[in-house]
Every structure is written in structure tokens, then in C-alpha cells.
Image (cartoon, rainbow, N blue to C red; front, side):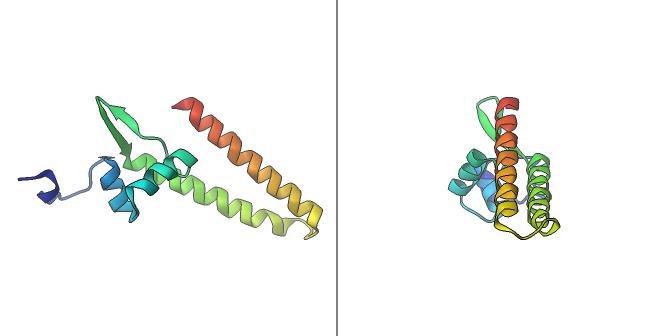
Length: 107
């Protein structure tokens, strides 16, 4: 019997790229692209296996959504002039870059 034929009563805590793609309803290529761009956490290595901690994935997605909501709400707090809008966009871009670099250093 193949591993994929076994019905599990619960999802695994550490997911392969195939399982993660299935749970996110996307392709395995999208999972790798999202991890490379910082939209998903990097996988952890267990022996010679690359796996994603499902709890880390959920937490990371929640943080990304919170940042997006905050960034969307920020422009309405300031005047709608073009100068302020550009500053807000540059600050958001710098914050995303800093988070990306911090994630890269902690891996």
C-alpha cells in the first residue's frame, strides 16, 4: 500500500511540498516560489527531508495578512496627496525587505 493511499485521521504536523500544495490548493511550484519570496516560511530539514511545519505556515500567513491589512489601512490615515502616498509605499516596501532579510538570517 502506498503512503498516498492511506487515509489519515488528521493532517501531518510537518508537510512535504506535495501535502502543503494540496492543503493550500496550489501547485508545488507555487509553494517553492512563495517560500523563496517570503510569502511562506522556508522549509525545515529533517534528516534528508524538506518539510514545512503546518503551524509555522499558518502563523506566517496570519502575519502576512496582518501586515497587508495594516499597509492598506495606512494610506487612509494620511492625506490622499501623491507625496504622502509615495512615502507610505516606500516605507511598506522597506518594511517588507527588512522582514525578508530577517527571515533569511534566522534560517
